[in-house]
Length: 183
Image (tube, rainbow, N blue to C red; front, side, top):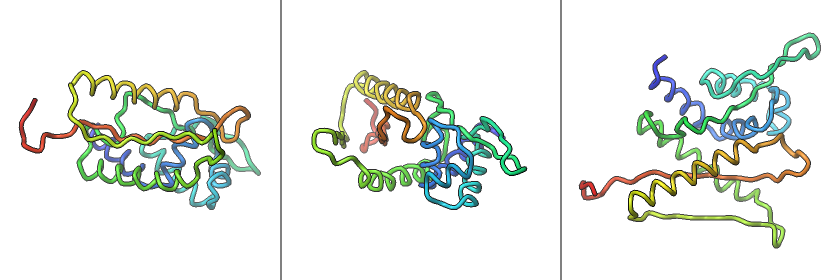
């Protein structure tokens, strides 16, 4: 499979809200299909189907296998790769747009599940379509990549003592000049 085909396969696999949830869940934990099903309140068959698609796309690795009632249960893990672009890079515009739509659709659901306790319910919203110096853009992009990497590297299994459930949804990209010029 070529690099382009691999990227398209990844984007197709992630262009589904349930699979995005699974990737997030499996960033901090090694879980079987049954455990994923219980955590996301879906059937084990549904969890298995989506996990196989994510594994086939190269987004999950089999971290372990265990014997369960005479059968083998795979435990999957998502390994975050800060160097691999998400929803961009070499993929087609259609594939990237599908990824952006799934990501955008996930935000209202996640927002509805936010913490609402006074003094603890912090959030940050930014919408910016601005003209800035290239150096500023590069610094912002690097800081976002650093924050995303830190969050993924720090992920723990669900409800681990001393942890909080958090969300970070980011879409950052350089815009084309609407007049077609370059600056």
